[in-house]
Length: 183
Figure (spheres, rainbow, N blue to C red):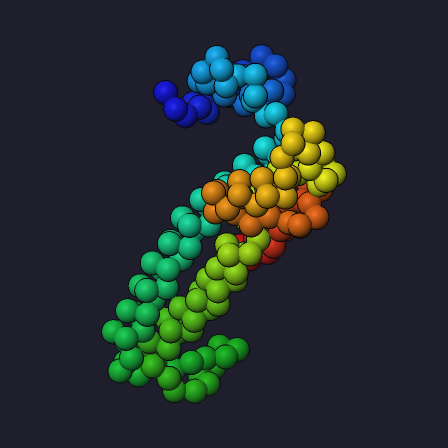
């Protein structure tokens, strides 16, 4: 087995009362005896949880963006189907200006595209991982003789995430707010 079962983590969390301890214990269950002593060596719980949240948001944004793209495409199809149907826009329950029945569909498709542009920006710029200790100074990596910034950069790059140069305990919170704004 090369993955941790989320139900196992929940089971261990119920026993320990701590999410990160449960993750570590579940990880140790699938590691070799040689690897077990090194679980989370050189990292803090925030390095795990902040990066995990960024990965969850990355997956969620893909699903959401695909759904919105599908809806946008349906609206564009409807706008083309109805482009020659004369209709009357109204305002305050009165006729306003002649238009086509397809125009509102095109309008909503355009608004969805604007939202997709925001989501794309958040996806490309606001998914932040970390491996830099609570203070962002990479003390634990340095003690192990590792270049903490290089470790963090490589780690985040492998996960398809960005990282901060000067991260801290909760480096991703501001970036998570960017994602929530885009949503």
